[in-house]
Image 1 (tube, rainbow, N blue to C red):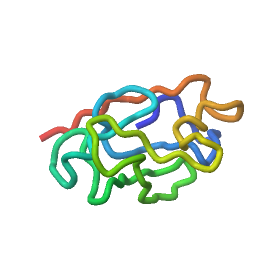
Image 2 (cartoon, one colour):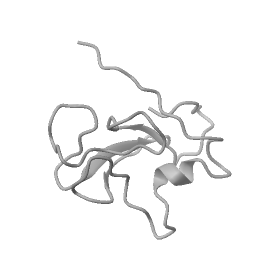
Image 3 (cartoon, rainbow, N blue to C red):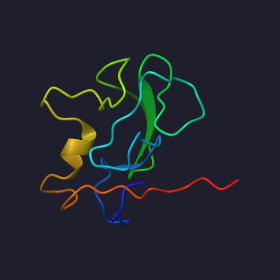
Length: 103
């Protein structure tokens, strides 16, 4: 989850997303272990699920379908949605809440 969001946050900021390999901003995923039930894994073909602050959910593509710390694919601006989230209308700095799954 992204730390510091409120109900007044811009709708295009990533709110909840697949657990990254490390709880660091911007998040990166391990595309070498698709479909495994471990922290940092991606889905098949280098994709992850992201929920935005506007309540929409989408499957987004990683920069590569292989690699240990792979960021999201950049848009035409050269930035991905995590980079854009810390812009003027977004967060002051991007920070991840490292939420643990309970058994």
